[in-house]
Length: 539
Image 1 (cartoon, rainbow, N blue to C red):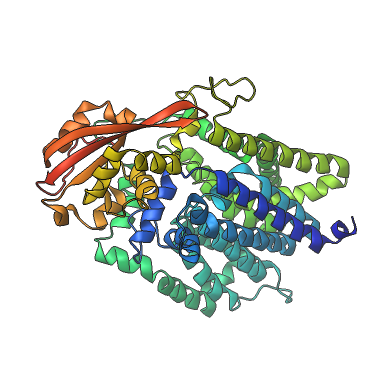
Image 2 (cartoon, helix red, strand yellow):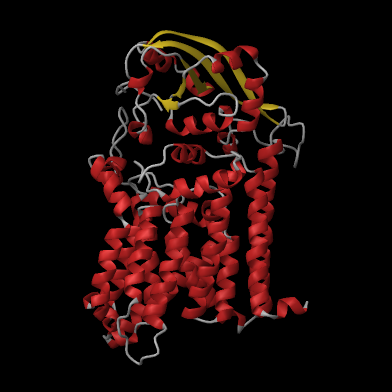
């Protein structure tokens, strides 16, 4: 027990135990659609990509290049390592902003929140390098604005370093630009720190920021600024043949509810409670005294690095579908405030705070492990060979069936002479969705490493990778899921591009003996012309 009396030993234990737990989950968790797609990034290395900057290709490829093994786990090695670094940087940020005990509580919270574990620390996503450089930027900003030895703030060289770090965050995900905006807004709001925006160091930081952005700028210059147009405009356009939607406030509440669930209620609800309470106290003090001096600058800093992103996306959710990871960097900053309040609550009851943290950690990690068991054994499915809790889900009601067992797919293709022969005699593979292509490549690359593409109106990065012109006159293997196979008009659309298309077989994907999906295989002979999407294309 003496080991845990030292705060340094406790921090080391939290970091190492988190690393160990996330590694176990990463090893057994089936790959997601996005991970398969980002794996294709690693096979088409470039300065940047259509829908994301370059860092996700580097973190996804790190483990594969290091081990020379391609598997869901090796795709995640970079993410697992990055998040351990992010947690330590976050701990240092909280310790400099408040106290070591507040920082320890902050570290525990950031280590156990389920969406942080999965979205930042296990699954290979752009969010992993983003949150690392986001945390490094926060640490640098806190050093700059709150840890100077002078009585009054004086801009320093750290502003230039901050320009590089924000640039690296932008090279991870376009959220980095929001972080830069929020830090500028904080300086504008704080009379004490406004001088930072007029210093020589901020000018140098801006120059270094632009230089750091070179990969994004160069790639977009080469491709008619496609990424910027997609992120700022095209992403929010109505899908072809889909009705336009009006703003719905209930959808925004739904986004907030999903956020609370993914943060876990015992953390998400207190998080919003302390944020609203602190914001109200600061606003009331400002109104009462009518002077910026009465604002808590550290809390003001947390508000600015958190609320514009979280509230902005919650509001946008009333009009547009919001991916669950989009608001999370904002919640990352809000955890600093909850860690601070957690230390204050210990003055009333250390036992209550300990039970809160330990109970949340046990509950969250137990749920994650149960889901992991289910994903690998189908334990929660009715008629499963390995029933748990009696089995109460069906393949239709089980949201985890979107995760595809690429190892099972590979084994069943290798055991089918017809499908294996078709694979080995094909010049390229294609499917009808960009997010399926990477998973199919993960599964079948060891059997026959051939090019993979997709035929759909939403081709994402495939529009900028080798074009179908090069495959004119060659044969393909078309692979799709059962739900798309049932859309006869989809297969009919592809027939005009080939001399002949014929179905040659299917493979059932099972979990615990229960069929959860099917892959259908078509032989497509002699590509007649390059693929051009139509408005009727179906993802």
